[in-house]
Image (cartoon, rainbow, N blue to C red; front, side, top):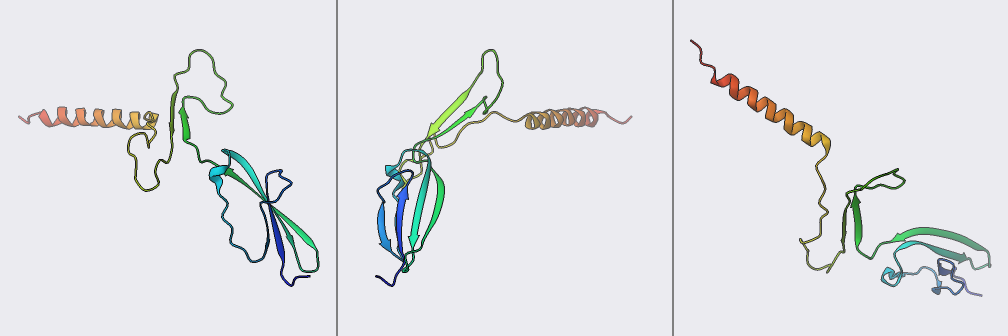
Length: 135
């Protein structure tokens, strides 16, 4: 019997462990081999006396391109024709920054339009009142 604790790592519902290690360990989980979406890392620990403990860690993998959509949200009630703006972009090469397609364009919010109209109205008022000549 060993004097060290032992851990077994499982991913999702797999019955075959990713590894069986004596602690402490340093382990690199390569998420590039996983499909995008929800996953669970299950760690089964066993102390030298044989008692077991369990810890599960849910996580989300997103290695594929990020997808954003404007014009439709989850659980919206809609009818008619929906104008949608959809963008998908990946991280690309981690060593160089890609400007093309790396940002999602968005339409201006209503408060931005209101602020622009108020500013234009104030500017027109200021221009008209500054043209009045005192006699």
